[in-house]
Image 1 (cartoon, one colour):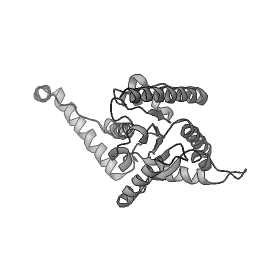
Image 2 (cartoon, rainbow, N blue to C red):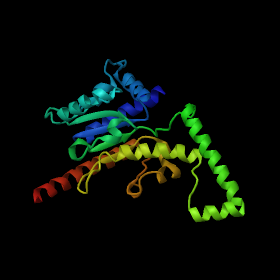
Image 3 (cartoon, rainbow, N blue to C red):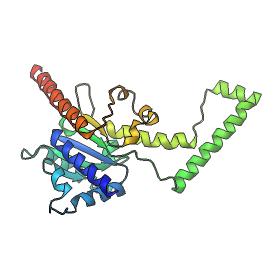
Image 4 (cartoon, rainbow, N blue to C red):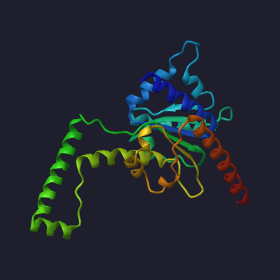
Length: 249
């Protein structure tokens, strides 16, 4: 677990160096986010910390749990984004949080978004268990009705499809991911890098759960170096195209 957090932190440090302006980093939960940030802020044997490397190029803003002070964090991010002494700002937030579902990070406010993991809900949560149980019961009821003539006819006429507990469980996580990803692409001339830092996104099921517009553009890299080179080229080329577009206006 320590190695994973270190690798993730070092990857984000490299991404923050390459991606210009605003960078968003979304975690599955506040617990995961706070645990990672605490580990990155801990000095290593050489005296430096991963946090220092992450924030060397971009000033950090961390999403607060308290919704009443979220507006302050949002304004802080905007202010740090305009600071000429840094290469933008980096916002650390959570999937299903106010930043991932309610804010517009268009243009320079969001030139990259990193999703650090698939935000599956806790299966042991009583609300989740009850919801999945109810949906599974409904699926069994529908299937039983489908095998009967009356139930089959009613099903055919209604055109409804029952959602199982597992399907709902996966759907909720993928919906949160797609909401977070959608923060950076807000209009036809906008651009941003989308980085999925979880090997489970390689699975066919997880890929199919991504938004349709994104699926054709997904690339899986076998090494970090090849991915970073591709990211560097994307940021360079997209920045040039953006500048050319602005010059024509």
